[in-house]
Length: 221
Image (cartoon, rainbow, N blue to C red; front, side, top):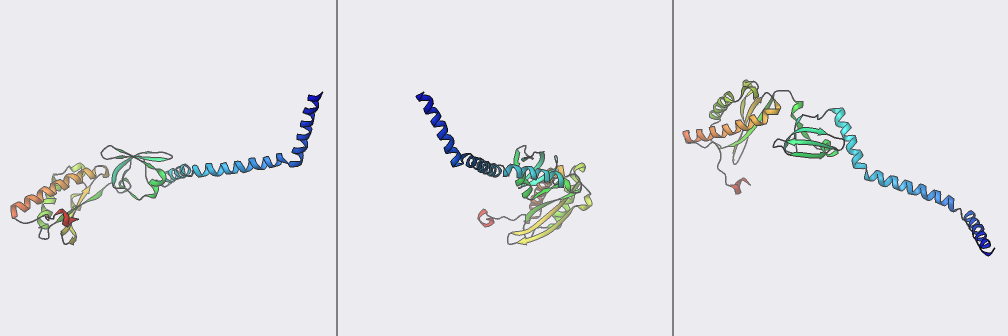
């Protein structure tokens, strides 16, 4: 009887206390407040993921880059291999992969060579001496264009040699190489640059004139 009385007294007293203190109402407010705080925390933590997903949808809508496109991103010559919801996978020309968050990818300017016309001009920029014979370089460049792979070149009539600038070290000579395909233009330009440098050294040796300036590293810096 004593134990039953104690249990009954505890239950009755606890009921009166709970009814007077409105603890259940306060508990409900506490749960709502906690849920709101958790929502804010989760939203803050997922903002980058949601931003990347929205950015990937933006790429899909505006078609600024597609799988297979040839682009120049942060001085990397790449192919777009994959566009995921959260990242873009780029393959560099040497076979390495760049994993870039989509949000960062669309906020960084890049060149999309595939979006250009199939034919394009690759500009090969060389620093030449002040007394360099540009006409001799122009003749050598025309000969080089005629020796390159015809499938990689555009219209040979578009090949040009221009002096684009000058400073204390010499003059900037630009060689415009017409290319038929953006995907092979980089390799064609590398071949042409190598042949132009060899031709310039040969002209300098045969004619006894400077083609390329001789500048010490400290002066160049």
